[in-house]
Image 1: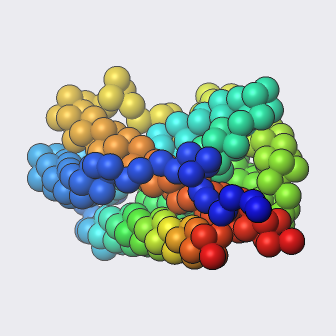
Image 2: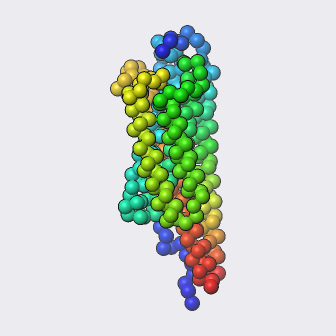
Image 3: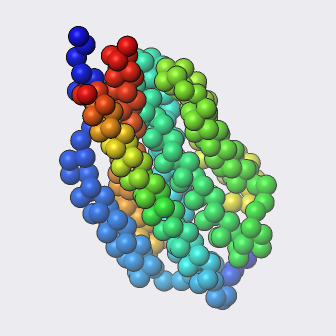
Length: 51
Length: 237
């Protein structure tokens, strides 16, 4: 690997951390929305079954 | 008269203290990344680019463990036929596909200043891309099949076969002459950088545990809702 230590590569470091957090938070939100929707469906199904 | 349809017969996991665990994990991730960046000097060869390894290597680690879980739960499903194994495999596969996608993008960001290109058909990169596509296919397959048992069986077969690619990804840097360097592990790193990597391994592992558990919880609740609706529909006739 050629030495690249002398270059300023902070923009790449920032981009890597930004994409990491965008992915984590994006997937986190997806999981919680899925959870909320599933709970809503279950409540609706239980209410329909109790009628 | 039939009894009212209810989800009581279907085990629905409770959230319990998992939300608290999730917030703790997020806070721990912020701390571990801050710690790694703050305590690591610029590398002799890579300079500050070395800091990308603190998120790239743990993300690829999560990729490996999630697909190992897919392999185990898929086999268990084929053997025992329990729904919970199918849903655990599917939850692990979704988290794994997310992290393998992230690993690829992080690698591209690292590759551009290091190799001069965003992408090259190197054995490590190509085998990782294949792994990503296999698990995107796995998730698409699940979306296309409605009948739970058939969906479970087909996806378990794909899960087992797809997970076989994980050791190929892992060993690709040893089996072929690749542009990608050998694995960075705590054993191969200078002690200056080791603690930062170890703490991020732990943070990403906690995150994966949390995400798989909550995704599994959602899948179980969705399955219970589906079965309750079916029971209500049958009871109405």
